[in-house]
Image (cartoon, rainbow, N blue to C red; front, top):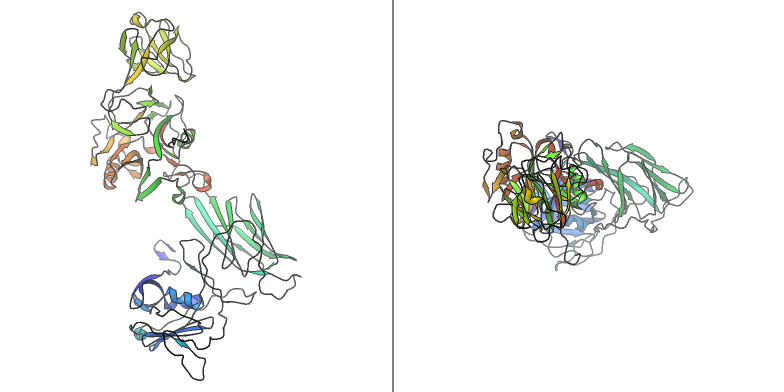
Length: 640
């Protein structure tokens, strides 16, 4: 571990070795081996390694062995790496040095235990070499490929061995890969008898050590506590709001209390029938499981230590088909063909958190979308849902359109409602709840907003989109509140007498995008500017009516809809201008990108995550928004 460039603990890692007799393997430095309990002797003439009554001696370019019943015909030889002599890890496993893995990707050597001498195996012939004779114990030898003798290696300064409790006779365990097992209590296997103490019971196992580790992912603390035993032991665990208590019948231990790096308190006590362990986790959520060889109880605790900060995205638990790529301050979240993007909006004049908008559609992720007026929460540009334009378009800024399958289009449409039926074809002038007596005004009801006015007529149309099925359901004068989803048109009957139709008259409506290739678009949201198109930088704020001297062009958090090849996704930049954002996306290989509302609105949410609370790419909480782009799992033909 290093903080601020200062190394706080030794950095030990395996190194790749290559050379005569090694092919490609990994090795550890000789000076580190005493910390694993290996006895090391090194001088100008050779190298000797001893563990548990077994000995390997390298001299004159070959190994000789003592205490083995059999060995491979060829053993890898020591190699020099960065000036230090390294021994292949495979030789350590031959000696019987136990290797364990608390997690599948982490190599971890078992705690150092004083080696116990074992009787040497009588003379065994290996590789056709006869056993040595003499007054000492016979030694089995084997030949290896010639290689340089370690005569030029520096002298070792062995580190003192690590001392651990010795409540049970030490043994030499064999290396067996650790495998997780269910968290239910495991039936204890009888251990070697341990002399009973003052407890009044004969221990079946001993608690040998307690170790812990702690990592932070933004405001999420991840703590692991490992209880290691001399043999398998039964246990029960009780949970409460403050932590966990373990009962370990028949287990001996050394009573202790300690405060962990996280601030959690851990205590071990010994009673009349066994031991108990108490871990106070300050309200964290804990998972308990066991590992074998040696037997361990593992407690993983996850705690949100600062709720004023959004929890981060848990990259190890992303939904299937979702990929997160980080390039410095730029993050790219992409979705494969299992997901479709959709536009979702809060009720008109209201706003909501992006996480809530994602959940409302059963999505896995989402990002805030269009610009809006913070005072009223009303969108300031186009929003279309299911083929209905619920907010009108400025007709000058980049727009994302989606068909029913979620296939995206980026462009500059000029959407207008067209009324047809009863021998007429009329373009609607505006969209909104407030009618202009000079125009025909359309509005999609939300169940709470009034439309109409004095001396104005409002028609409620039903029958769905398209001129073939639409008809007049009601015709009213004055103000009233249409139902949620009701499509209405309001007009002055003196100016538009052709629309003064009774209930039941045919009159349909459709949405004309007025740009090629958009006929089947169902959802749309305008924002802008367009940043990348066809793998090229296309940023043009003047064309879209953005004022680059204003706050909208400042360096701040940036979000965008993107495509990368055939996949759609979301981009997030920690800080930068729209120009910085566009150049970063182009360098990252993005095919196309359109900026969404950014700054204090910028929010990217992914479901699941730590504590099942979801995760955010933004590192500060953002304000609620009226609409968002949500990625939703597609429904298969079988589910339909």
